[in-house]
Length: 168
Length: 164
Image (cartoon, rainbow over all chains, first blue to last red; front, side, top):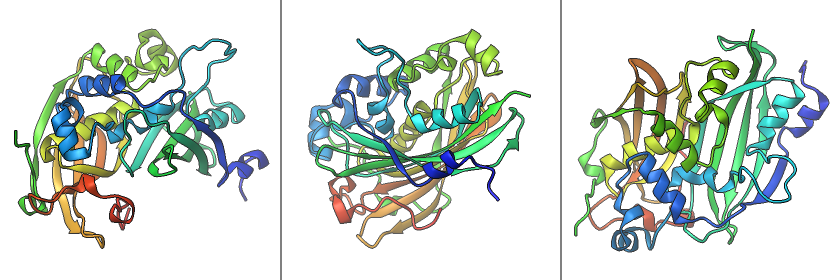
């Protein structure tokens, strides 16, 4: 018998928090990501290589979640908006103040290009009973995040395993 | 200019990727978090990380770790290599003052039903002597010098592995 609250059981398999990115995909973050990882791949730096290999500039596939991380501050916003809201909903409902991500699986579809405006939604796949680890006592959960571009083409799926916990 | 091309016939199970060692500085962590638009304090605020998360310093965030694995794989394949799928398990955190060492080995080579050639690689990130992350990735490679996995669209692009 599951010890999950009915509200959490109701979230499992439900498409939630469908949203459009707050800004267009742009090259500034692509350069900063390449810079942060010392990535010299010419398809991100050289127009000729991008035209020849990827039909123009693209974003690094691994940046897929970047385009949905909300601004830290924005006018008329009373509360800070959080990315991966389902994760924070679970922390809140189980009153687990800390959390870490333990597993991440990403499948990449159509390349994301500067100027694209992506859409996303989140789906809770599972949530465990209470488990004790070296970090504390808490629960594991699996969340899928799907991404499509403005033409409805699938560009990727990000699957996270999170662990929300309270330090013992 | 001709770009580096790693074609699938050049790799086989057991082929090793060149080792990559990177010294991690506070800016490595903070720049990575900012590039990923990850404003959470454990990636830039020492006091928060140590007192709230109970770890010894600020630590690398998940999307930036993925970007490091992508860099490691495509440094090996060259620009025609197209990452299709990646899975990683974080066993411990990456902290400033340590050296990250990436190693990798090809575990499989196959061609899917759409004719796309793939290499599957098992990657290990060791930091400060600890295995901090284990990763599996599938990367599409040109079958020949005229082939380009980036040209694949729709039904011609099947990045999901058969198993896992």
